[in-house]
Every structure is written in structure tokens, then in C-alpha cells.
Length: 425
Image 1 (cartoon, rainbow, N blue to C red):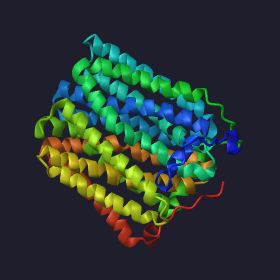
Image 2: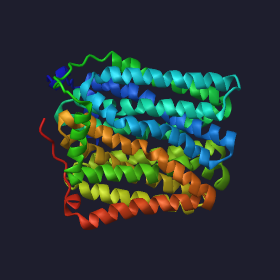
Image 3: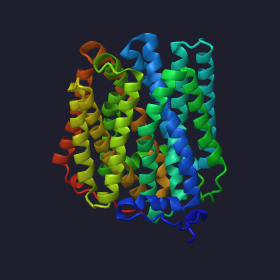
Image 4: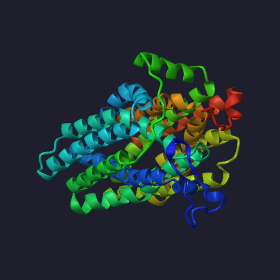
């Protein structure tokens, strides 16, 4: 079957795994399969990088606030540049954007690894690498979202989004635990070297994928492009809600991940190995959420999935915050992973299938800002944790997510009745 954009789906034995696993049919597209495999390596590196970066800076400073500073160094440039990154994704060859940003990120991490190996690493080095990473993410993330449309047919776009999301969830099971073991036995430098190599893999593979570039209209003004994307969101409340939900997830939910080193060392007393298991438990829960969507994700009532998932996510954050019993904490973070995945993948699916192709890069750039703003949430959570304790900071975050989801659901019928329907090309 000839697919749009020159790609071709080829049936592979055993690929169709039933209604609960229809997302795997996206792997029938060779180009998507190559992208997906290399993305698996890069995201594994990212998961290990977060763990190693957080543990090292907490060891160097003994302060939760510095965990927030790392987040701020990442989020600042990402927030400022993400709108421009969305425009770039709509204007330029997305393969080149992904390649360039991955190589620059990899180089910065390899430099950090060398400084660490030579025992020359300082806090400002970690902050500098976080700044470079955030700057590159502003261009990389919109391009990675927008390129999916060129790798599969429109009818399989939802499956590709779900399968792309499974990369993040699957790596959260293995990569943090592996990163914790590597960090504990081989040290931070070895962990950073491995992360840098993983980042390079995605850039190299994507650069070699042959994609027929879509025709792009010539535009006179970058600011005009920016305004067009912002206006689309502003005049469509459902999209504003979805992006707002992503904001609350990132600002208040992401902070729970950033505070995990505090819980692992000071409250649960389980060390870096136990921290890796906490991250992995979240990943197992996320995988459960992905496969659950494989069974009931075709339901038309996407609004119910978003609202219900967000409410459950916030509730389990509160439970984790109040737990001092490691097995209960593992159960709570497992449920956090499942609930958060269900509603955030649903948000991504609705955005991907309902946003017009010509606006996808810009809309996903705006959506990406909400992801990148998460480290700012970590900063406020770090201050709250230093002042009132990490449990109190997490309770505030969970309650805020619940309040937003329930408040909008109670007042806006179009959100409660939200369905996913493909947009015109």
C-alpha cells in the first residue's frame, strides 16, 4: 500500500495482535519503525540523564532547591524558544532539525561526562548542560511531534502517537533502574557517556530516513506564523483546555518526579538503587496505562478519559506524598504512572488528529511549552520542600491538578463531550 508522503506500509507476520494491540500496526511502516527504534535509545538516555543529573547535583549541594535550579536552567530557554521551534518545524526539513539538536545535546553531555571523570565537575557545569539541553528541546520536540505525520498514513496516526508514547513509558521501567545501577557501580561519568551516545543515535538514524517533503507555503513573517498558531488555540476552547491540562500535569505533576531523590534518600531511605526502582515502578504503571488505552482508547468520550485520568493522577500524587512505607509508595507511584499516561496520551491523540497539518508544528510547539514549563514547577516545589517539607509540596501539586480538571469539567459541557475526530488535511 502506498502511503501519503512516499512511505509504504508492509504487512509483517504476527504484527496484528488483536484489538488491544492495534497500536503495534504502526510498526508496519519501515520508516516509522526506524524512527521508533532510534527514539527508544534516545529516550532511554534521557531517563538515565535525569536520574544521574538529579542525584549528582543533590549530592554536590544537599539542597532540593538546586534540583529546581536545574529545572529552571532547562525550562527557561525551552519556554522562550518553543514557539519559534514550532515555526521552524513547519518551515524546515524536520530531519535536519532533529539531527542538529540531537548532536549538540550529545556533545554537551559528553563534555560533562569528561569533566566528571576528571573530577572537575561543578554545579555550574550541570546547569550549563541543562541550559543547552533546554534550548535544543525547544526545536527538537516540535519537529519530533510533527514528523510522525510523514512516517505513517493518517488513518494510523493515532496508533503511531500511542506507540511513540510507549517509548517513554517502557524506558521508565528499565532505564532509570539501569541508570541507578550504573551510577551506583560505575559512577556518574559512565552514566553520562552512555547518555551522550544514546542522544547521538536518534539524530544519525533520522538523518538517514528518506522522506518526501510536503509542499510548504512561502511565508513572509515568522511573527505572522506565531500569531496564526496562537490564534488557533485562543479561538478553540477545547484545545486551550487540553494544553492547559498539559500545563498542570507538567507544572504540578512533573515536580513530583523531581522531588523523588529527596523521598528516596531522606524519607524512604532506599538510596540511588531504590530511587531507580521508584522511577521504574512509575514506568510499569505507565505501560499498564498504554495497554489499557489499547483496549478502551477507541472510546469516543475522550473528555471522560482526560478528566478522570487527571483526577486519579492528582489523587495518587497525594497518596505518595503522605506515604512513609516503601511498598505503599511503589504502589502509589505505579498508579500515578497509569493514570497520568491515560490522560496525557489522550491529550496528544486529540491534538494530533484534530489539528490541521499546516498548523501542527506550531500547535505542538505551544503544547511543548507546557512540557518545558515542568522544571519551573520543580523550582516552586523545591522551595516549598525546603520550607515545609517534600510531602507538603507534593500534596499542593496533586490538589492543584484535581482542582483544574474537576473545575473545568463542571463548567464546560464541550470538554465533557470531547471526542477525537480527524481534522481535514
